Image 1 (cartoon, rainbow, N blue to C red):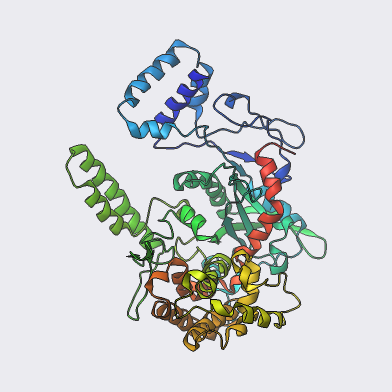
Image 2: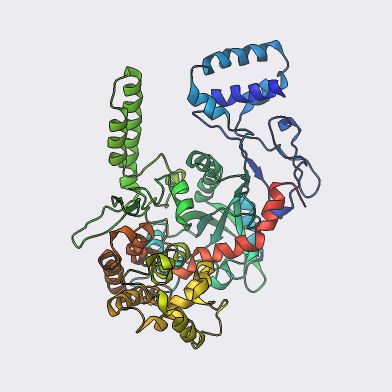
Amino acid sequence: MTTTRRVHRTTIWRHRQALRFQPVRVPLREVFRIQQHQGGLDAANLDSVSPMLDDGSPHEAISPILDDDFAQVSDDRSSSSSEDDCDEIDEQMRNDEDLLDYFSLAPPVYFFTFDLASQLQQILDCSTDLCLVNHAKNRPTTLQDIVDGEFYQRLLIAERGNNFLTLTMNVDGVSPNRSSSLSIWPVFLVINEIEKGKRFALENLIVGGIWPGPSKPSREHMFVFLTDIVEQLKVLERGQVFHVHSSCGSSRRISLKVFLTSCCCDKPAQCLVQRIAEPIAKFGCGACEIHGIYNYEGRCNTFPMTEGDRLRKRDNKRYDELLLVYESNAKELAAFIERGTRGRNKLMNKHKLSVKGIQGPCVLRSLAYFDVGSSFLVDSLHNVYLGVFRRLLNMWLSTAYQDQQWSIHGQLDKLDMMLTNVHFPSTTTRLPRSLAKFNKYKGNEFRSLLLFGYSIFNGVLGSQYYSHFLILVLIMHISESRTIQTDWMDNLRHLCTQFVLIFPRLYTVRHNVQVVHSIAHIHETVKSFGPLSNYSTFNFESLLGRKKLDIYRFTNGRH
């Protein structure tokens, strides 16, 4: 066991810069029926891992972050040469505390990726809900789906004469149960050309990969995890012949290009994929380069906007510029450390300002039509309902703010009584519970309360606070409408801007955190990709909830 551990350290040390992961790409008939060797993965039994396909045939072993050198060293781990190598490396490590800390990361990290083309073919073989769009609209007057948005219309012009499909991706962490500390991260993709009502059905879901935990991946891990998926997408971008099923029961062979055009995640997952700073950091916005201001009262960064602000938007061109700065900074810092001169922290702070939150290359940048700014969509679930609205309710109703002028904590009973008299639509899936339990609300409860129960706050909140709240209500009614008139876009932009401008005046700068600022970008996402409900993580969270046990069993070899 001791020898194996030392070899493991040696190999990681050799490749710590490259992090050369060896993913497993599994030809998928049924994603969650692949059998894995019992006993798990650790430094002692790596050679024994041999997953099986559902038909019983052996498949390539699941490899950790190590490459072919590991297999060669592992086979000879009892030999004197391996011991000599370890002794040599151990001697180098003794004077490097950073490396020793790095080596404490055991057992090795591994992940699963799945064949995208075969899953696409399975969906196209069976689905009768696919609608290929092959021409751009002259002047679309309404937005009903992603295909009506400006982004898709530009793609139709760029790919004139070609048949293509587009995908939306979601990356998120899920625990098998509430008491578990395990965090499993699946990558899901859906086809935007499938009819909205069937788009997120299980039979139309594409699983790109699974990060099996046990904890949240780092940005570097996420980059390597997604690399194999991106390589498959780049092949699909060049075009491939698929059998496409028609509604009349026949099928035809056509050449289709496939493009990833959007990604919708919560903010913690987005910063991993986009490779930017945490959402609470000074440059934590994934859509623009707003510079957060540290608030000493709340001990957090805040993001207030003023009337004259002209914030630089993130896009591919700007990303390429900042990545060059990032790489130049890395070389400058390495040379600075080598010289051993003082002032390292000052130089690092200067570098942080210069890169505007960029923390390395985003793997999705290499895709043909993915924009590392606008393709990351505003998510209504986490940004609005579990974000801004929950924060507002907390300020209005919790005892922590009962001395503030916006507090209505003393009127909880009155609000609950009025809430029982609200007539919610018959399609409402979850009615809001008592406002005394708002901290335990699910996303759908926040949504129902904001969209249909907002009037209970009239006459209870102060007039200026209620008027400000109505701006948010109107923003969401427009943004989640089944049909949005394109001439509403200027009004929507004005509403979003007014909400974020007024917020710090009413609730102080201390509460103007990142999720509040994200409201400023809702109109941009709607204009480019259509109504928020067509790609919200509400849809993906539902899939995660239904499949999290299967994912957990798959990653642990239990079937």
